[in-house]
Image 1 (cartoon, helix red, strand yellow):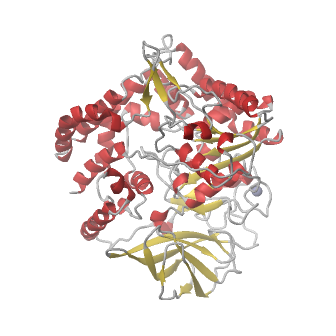
Image 2: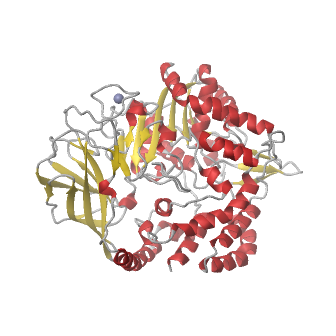
Image 3: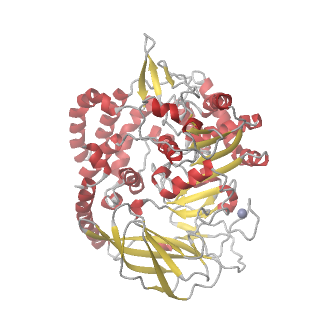
Length: 635
Ligand SMILES: [Zn+2]
């Protein structure tokens, strides 16, 4: 049964693209804002012989029913095969259909487009949100539209003043950075302003950093907000092109939970599906992807220095791909190693910078690093972190290589990330458990990006108690959020006397059943009360907060979710005890004891319990899916 769900989900993942509506209010900031979208989040068009254009990316599935229809027999056949343990067949069938849906995306060995395919023209008069909205241009579920719409609607920016930079997502970061420079100058002259603000998401962040490395002395930029920037690349291209995918299923499912917005934990449903199945499915896609994307400059720009040479030597010919190699060599041997220096120089020259990172997840295609699903924390922020499942020992207060201020505590509540070693410790924000580039679906992530881009309220991680350096994700699918009453989110001091628990579901009511501390002797007695969405409960506690500084503890909140059916759920929060005591830990790495899941000690019994729970979960997920936005959209 779970294999069937896995097969269906992999098809649903491919089609999860929805439309969005727009509205507008008045402005607060009048500096032009340029949004630089992530990898393949921009539009591409094919120039036909008669001079007219046909959109080739992003693919519009609704308009391509004939292609989808033609492929259905093969997909169904491969789904049957996948069910009979041949997921590679499904991978290949999906890739074949994708190739037919977007037939003109291939590049020549030198990195240029094989067909006359270009991005939309970067004319400021046509790339501002006011024009886009009124021109009837079709938009899909892209991070920048959701975000751009939000800041205009909430009155943080005027639609005429918010620009979306278009680029060819197949091209290397150096090429695109040069185009960004031209666009920045065009926006300045169109708007009549001296400076612009940049907001770069993922690959868009890397492009902005490449631009700053090359052209910061132009003096055209006042502020840059990097959201999950791919400064240091990732292992994604390496895993996909080489067919060595090792899929992190649970964490990837989280993205579907985000998008469907159904207050549902699909991850639990699949927790004992063999991730090997998805790995084989993606490795089945691999050959097709390689054929398609091996000459895309962006694939190499997005690859970490560590994996670059092997990928280059395997897929690029030294003379046929000379230009593609030359440009990516500059990225890997001049720009990537200098990120720290570039960002610091920008700050020194008066450019304000904010970096937003997500953490606490596995790399989706395999690897041990603490990541946001696609990018390792270290490559996004420069901060040292332990691999998942490990943490720094109690007493560790950071290596302090960048921030030397003894009064600052830059180690994460989970004691996994040492932000005192980050590129910019005072200007880097982390959201634990949030997925790569999904900030727009989370209240906190959206507010953080909005404030950072549109206001001057967040000078650094100490500017506002509402936006500290570390928070954990308030994605509604997580059900509850908890922090102590006085301390910064994620920390506990002897000034605290209550735990504040919030129901963060969008529509489910909950009741807190129990609150249990780990690593400290605290007794909580939650009131017997039903919490509506958004409502909070103050829970007093008895007992002593542990002695010492930088001591890791945790609190597990168990609650019942009121729905068509009622169900018990729980979430564990990391809390580090802080005091003024001096510590002398040098950061030895130890096991992360509070992350262990329940075990009876008997593997066979654990599997049986998991199977029973999965049948129960299946019923819940079915009911919740029928009630979800995604289901309504499909209808
Ligand atoms: Zn500091």
